[in-house]
Image (cartoon, rainbow, N blue to C red; front, side, top):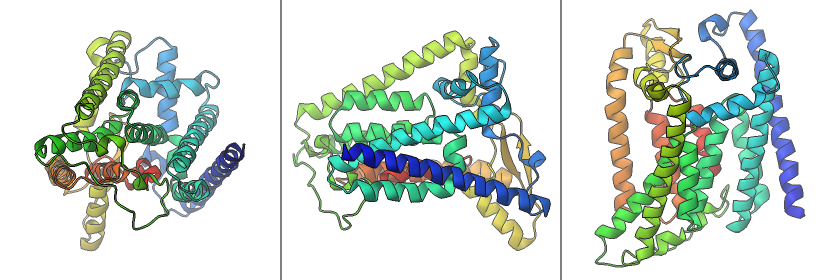
Length: 380
C-alpha cells in the first residue's frame, strides 16, 4: 500500500511538473517571438502532434500513412497516434489528448522505475525524484513525442534481461523496435557479452559482482549483475538464452512487419528506411550545433529549412554536405569502439552498458538532439 501511494504521489508530481514546464516554455516563446528573438513558426514547420493528427486521420479515412503520407516511423508508432484521434479531430483537442496519453505512459515508466528500485534494494524516493528532476527540462519532448515510449521499452527490455527472462526481453525489445528502431540497441551489450564468453571459454570464469563506488543510483540497477552474466561460457543456459532472445525478437519484428506490409500498401511500409536515408542534418543534432557555433564564430551564413519529406527542420550551411558524408563513418567508428570496449572489458552492470550504447547513438546521429537523452535517463 505504501509503494502504491509513493508511485501515485510521484506520478501526480511528475505530471504537474511537465505541464508547468511546457506552459512556461510556451509563455517564454510567445514573449521572445514578439521581440524577434526566436525562429518564426513558419520556418520551424508543424509540430509533432499536428503530424500525428494528419497521419492518424489518414488511417481513419481508409488511407495508408506510408503510401498516402510521409510516416517516417515503424508500423507500431501509429498506434499511440490513433488513440487521441478516437476522441479528438481538432488540432488543439488532439494535442491535449496526446499529451494526456503520454502522461499516462510516463506514469507507467515511473511505476517500472519504482519496482526496479525496490527489486535492487535502492531507495525508490530518490529514484523517482531524480527521474522527475532530469525530465523536467525536456518536458515538451515527453508530452509531444514518442520518445517516452522508447524509454519505457528500453528499460523494460534491459530489466527483463537482468532478471534472466530472455524470451520476455526479446518480446519487449521487438515491440519497441516496431515503434522506433532504437530499442534494438538494448540487445547489443548482451550479445557482445555472449560472444566474449565464448572466446574466453578457456578461463570458464563468471563475471564478478563489483561493488559500486556510488550507492545512490536512480534505479540501483548498476548494483545488480544480470543472472545470465554470472553464467560461465560452458553453461548451456547462456547460449540457449541468447537464441531465445534473438528468435523471439525476430519473430515479433517479422509478424508486425508482415502485418504492416499487408495493411499499409506492400513495400510502401518500408518508407521509414527510405526517409531516414534521405534525411539531412537535423538542426538540433550534435553536428548542427557544432556547425552553427562555428558559423557564429567565423561569421559564416547558415539557415534552417523545413523538409516536408521528413517533417523536420534541417541545417543549410556550407558544411552540411561534409557533415552528411562523415556522419555515417563517425557513427560506425564510435559504435565499433564502444562495442570493442564492451566486448574486451564487459562490465558487470548491464545498465551501464546499455547507457553507453544509447549515448553513442544519440551523439553520433545527424538526426537526433541531446533531448533524446530521455532514453538514457531511467538508467542513470
